[in-house]
Each structure stands twice: as C-alpha cells, then as structure tokens.
Length: 310
Image (cartoon, rainbow, N blue to C red; front, side, top):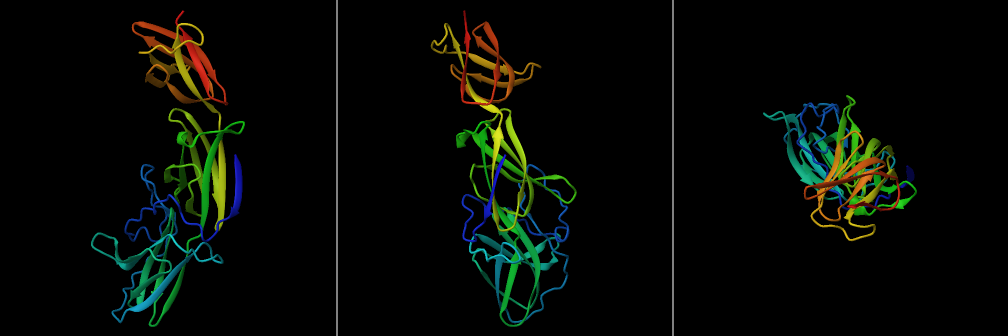
C-alpha cells in the first residue's frame, strides 16, 4: 500500500460529498461516544460534550459569530460547514430541540444569553460543543480536528484499474470497539473530510470476491492519499468450436472454487467479470450439454478463457 501525506489546504471544498447525517442529539449522545451505529447505516464520526441542563435565560438576542478550525492551532475552514444550534434541555422525546441552522461560514446567529449545544458537520467530520452566549457580540470557534482522505486502487504490479470497477467502504470503531460504517461506495479520488483517527478501508474491485484492505491514519490538517493493491484480474469467457473461434450464443456460465462454492453465474455468449487470485472451475452449459475446464487467475492484465466444444 502506498501512502502520500500532504497539507490539507483550508480552501479545499468537499467535492462530491454529502453532509454527514446528523440526527437531533439526545442526552446519551452528549458525552457518550460509545453509541453503536449499525454497519448498514453510514455514521459520521466526531466529538461529544458533557450534559448541560442550563436553560438559556430570556433576554434580548445577542449577535453570535461561530467559525470552525481544522485543529486547535489551524486555520479557519472557509466553506462547507453545516451548523446546528440546540437547546441544552431534552424535550419529551429525550432529544435536544433544534433552535437554528446555518450553512454560512462563519455562521451568524441571534441568540439570547445562556448556554447552547453547537454542532458543526463538515463532510463526514463533525464536532459538538457547549457554548455560552453573553451580553454583547460573541465570537466563538469550534475545533473540528479534521483531515482529508483520498483513496485509489491498482492491481499488483501497478496495473491501473478503471474507476468504474472500484468502490471503497470506510469504517471506524466506537468506544466499545465495534465497527461503525462511516462511508459506503466511495469513488476513487473522492475527497472525504473525516475526524482525525484510524480508519479501516476496504477496496472492492468488481462485484465478486476481489477485495483489498488497509488501516489508515487521518491527521488534523493533512491529506492522506492511499492506493490499495489487488491480487486479481479481469476475465472473459468464451465457448468456441475451435481455438480463437467466435463465441457461441445461448451459453450459460458458472464459476466455482475447487471446494464447490459458486462465485459467478451468467447467461450470455461473452461474459466478463473480475476474480481474485486463485484456482477455479469453469462450467459452460449449451442446451443439454455441459463443458468444463479448470483455470487459474493471477494478478495482471485482462485474460480470456476459452472452452472448446470439441
């Protein structure tokens, strides 16, 4: 695996990203990052703050300007932040009431003096903090502790893979050590903004069994670029009456492992797929006749596998 680390410029927008899903915070969410998110649901990663029960006191609204930094001593993030301001008292459903929202940077709110929970989402990164609004202008900063991640993959030997065959899933672990899905079906070279930490990345080459995995470290204010290497290849199949002949139509195909597990089925004259390195058994059905051969997949360029009817 090849890693390249560079500075994450503060002017880099999160192209191709959706803001992280942010449900209304509950008291258990504030100060307890151990809430498990099922793997089926992508979850943003972030920080949490202690429970606060002080209710903002009625009073004349004050101007509040809030900005986000990539790290304690980092620069202000100029765009792409989604801000939410919540009360600090749970409602009847046990959730904190959403009081205001903004997508401006910096965000400008008008809030009465008191305490609030402020949540900032930047791509897949997020952070929450409890802030106090005082009489007069208020200038506040939220530390997102965010870095960037870009992913790509190749076949061992530095053979390029067309982007259409690739996708990536990104996981992290919660406070209890359970795997949490952060992003699904990430495209090659898509920029992800993530909270700093360690992430487990799985690269999928095709849709059968070719995968590659790596644990990557995201650091505040830095861009991590990683290339994962697959031991796999693209393969095509042909049923022919003679070597190099035309593919025979109306052929059904099955690929099995030596242990008998079916990994691929298709009904077409000239199917194509991607398989991980290994040995396989290829079956071709034409009417009531079945032809077979063994073959091996090695990392490399696309390969054509023929079965000859004679």
